[in-house]
Length: 139
Image 1 (cartoon, one colour):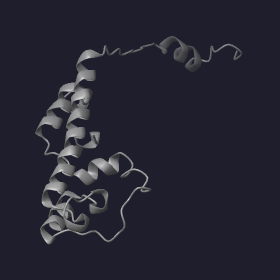
Image 2 (cartoon, one colour):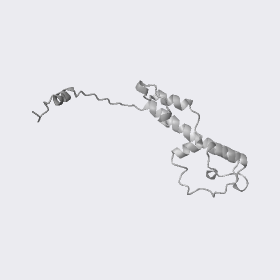
Image 3 (cartoon, helix red, strand yellow):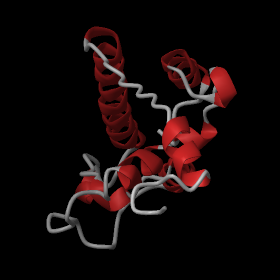
Image 4 (cartoon, helix red, strand yellow):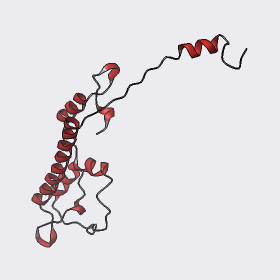
């Protein structure tokens, strides 16, 4: 998740847990290509099919809109042609992984104890000694 897109409602615009959850619920589902790209690509490429992919124009259009690389899909049609159902199963599988990831992140946010450490110190006496010229070593 790109936190630059989350509007913080905390003090001085800080992003709170509620802001993240609200953003996750209100945002449209990301394109498959964005999810794959955020995970570092489509996995090595060693098992990729040849660049010549058999698919109908409708399948190519949907894949383009969703940002899906058709060479990542094994077609079930004649001669390995990618059918609309193949593409939809691929997209559903990727979205399912994304939803599982979001669910696990939410579980961690609610079940793991979070600790924050705030430290405060006063340097007034040190600075006043220095400012007044009474710093050790300075007569």
